[in-house]
Each structure stands twice: as C-alpha cells, then as structure tokens.
Image: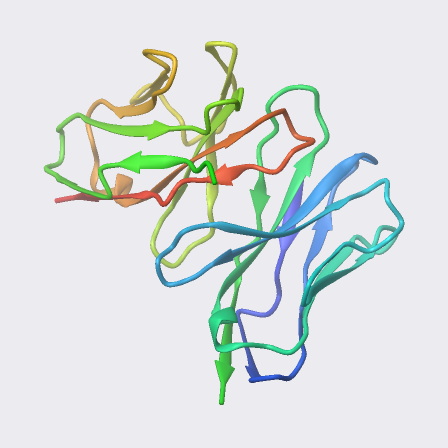
Length: 116
Length: 114
C-alpha cells in the first residue's frame, strides 16, 4: 500500500522569507502523480502544485516549486516570498497513474504559520 | 471558473438517523470521489465512482454508506444510520479523467452527529 509521510507537524516562516515543507512517500509503482494541497481555515482543499513522476523537471507555479527526488521518494514544497495568505495546512498527496478513477492518499499535513 | 459545490455546508443529526450529503461536480468531469476528514486529522479516501458504478472503496466505506448519481448533475453520499464517529468534514471531488488529472474539491460538508 502507498503511504505518504509529512514529518513536520508545524512550520513557521517570516513574511517575504522562504520555507520548505517536507514529504516522503512509499510506493512500488513507477508511474504516479504527487500533489500539494493547501487547506486554509475555511477547510477548502486547494491544489497548489502537481508533479508527474515520469518528468525529471521539477514543477513550479509562481512562488511555489517542488524538489522531486524519485529515487529517494521525496517531494518537498518550497514557498518563496511567503505571504500572510500562505498560512494554512499543507497536505502532500499521492495518486497512482491509472486509466480509471485513482484515489488520493494524503499525508498528515504541515501547519504553516506566517509571521510579520 | 467552474467549481464543485456541496450542500449543506453544515449538517447536524442525531445518532441513528440517515443523512444525505449532496455534491454537484464540475459539468464535464467523469470521475467522482468522496473523502472525509475527522477534525485535526488527515483527509481519507472513502469511494470513487465512474460510469455509474463504484470504482474503488476504502475499508471505511462499509454497508452503512452508499453513493448515487441520481441525475446528470448530482452525486450523493448517504449514511444510513449515523454513528458518533461519523462526525467529520466530508469532501466531494471530481476530475475530468482518472488518476492522470488533478481532483477538484468542493468546500465540504461538516457533519455533526450528536
């Protein structure tokens, strides 16, 4: 079974600084997808960034980028120029690439605080 | 921008009662999911649904749970006889394709069982 581990329950960053959230996963599959979702206090789940396992290039979305290390099964999220609106729970998630419906397996989350 | 909607936003029910949680997925999406999140815990998969049948279900999704797509737009989760431990946030999600595409989540329904 696939598992996703986030070892940092809480992180703090000052506004305008950079922070990295860690995620490791375990799978025997070679073709899969990894995601970071943001959950603000409203509890809505918002997709931040997606990485396809077959792509060597790390995904980037504006201030958000990932460091995907397939051999190490590591998938960290870097937030640059942190803003107050970035404060939220961040969940790492895994999905097996499939032609049919494929569930997301989530980690336990990292609560990010952004301070002035 | 199209979005997944869920109703109600908050449902309070007594133990043993039946509840139906409703979702309207994004219109051109073909794959539908339910997840739940007990307060303070991670999001857990319940069930996936495609072509009018269940694709996969978790061990949480026992005989008390059922899903249905009664018409072309709604996707429902029914809990027949609620238990205290069913209290959680329930998220509906949809995707245009299977595991190759990201899932878009609704805002959730907070279910409180008393």
